[in-house]
Length: 136
Figure 1: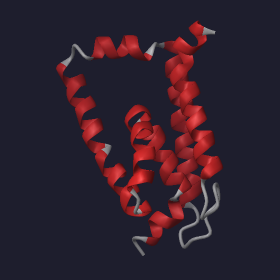
Figure 2 (figure 1 turned 180 degrees about the vertical axis):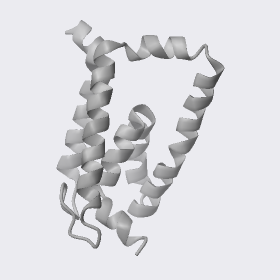
Figure 3 (figure 1 turned 90 degrees about the vertical axis):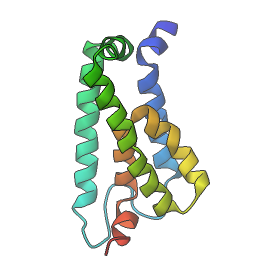
Figure 4 (figure 1 turned 135 degrees about the horizontal axis):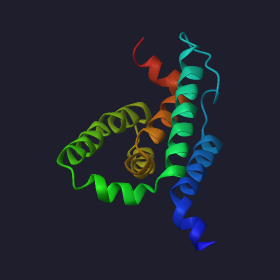
């Protein structure tokens, strides 16, 4: 059991997060949009599923933490990582603007910082209609 958690713990945490996010989501349909631009929501789900599939494939072939140790020695890898995490402040700001609640933002901060775009894409897919309403 410990070996499984060590090897797949992040994925178990991610899928638990997805299940909780979907189960507690309210206000709009989970998979289909009823808004002005209905094709964007299924497209976001497709992008999320493809990216998740690719990430699962990569994690089956290479250990994330071992790779991170090797990558951390390369300056450009550090720059790309820093760029990613600075870039994650933008969707966190959008989450705050869309929700209007520091509590909900706090609930998304850790998943976004751990799972990065896997969490961001999930938020965008779940809240597509309400985000689009801010722009039209």
